[in-house]
Image 1 (cartoon, rainbow, N blue to C red):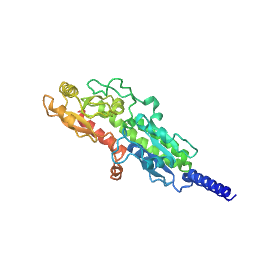
Image 2: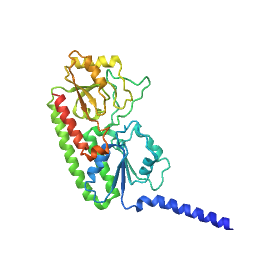
Image 3: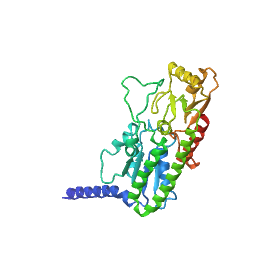
Image 4: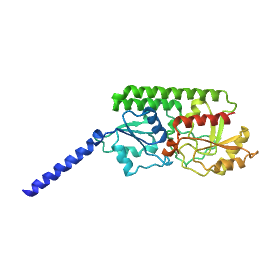
Length: 318
């Protein structure tokens, strides 16, 4: 009889603990939002400006961790499961998210898949002439660098704001006001991009690197040649690719060769050495893939980077 009572008490305690766990985020003093990459984090920050509800925001991919190779830690998984809203890019690099929510329950957060929000705007990675390939049978993949389009950003921010209001309706007017101000800033910057490219003398650039800027370049009609596709894992370019890109630089009378943030510039330097003039200037465009929390604390933002990239384009396109 005593054993039966003890077993009953243990079962009862376990039920109480599980119940407390499932209700924990509902009873927490602060709401929680978890994002994967820096652009998503910064979009949320912009909507929460001055944060009247005291919402806690976490960015998972810190310290320059690459989206394409990231795998969540046990703590990351717990943070996701215990948050109220989870915002991620989507696509092949984020397939691990399916495992996190494999055993879905009533305590799961509101989940925002940004690529799902942009279905009609998604682009397949482009295999351009001269690019390195990753072998036969290579499948087409959607380009995951959706944030490198101001137009995409505006759609994403609308979606995040909608879910934020769903979570915290008391501050609806505040979030809508922040959204409208931010969308206005993005729209103004978009117009500056249109103006810059429409007045450009040169509308083709050469990348001695990966090319994650297809959304950005397609928005404004800029053409390109590159060593690798945007999500390529390759790091060594063949002699044929080097010679092709060097020849294109000569043919198009290029003054610059482009790299992306985090690049060591070795491939670009080798391409330059194989041009006739051997005097191309190596210039970087920021793809927002290596931004850290430290960068954020120093004032770096989605808008500031996209504005800095515009300044670079004004130079290299003219």
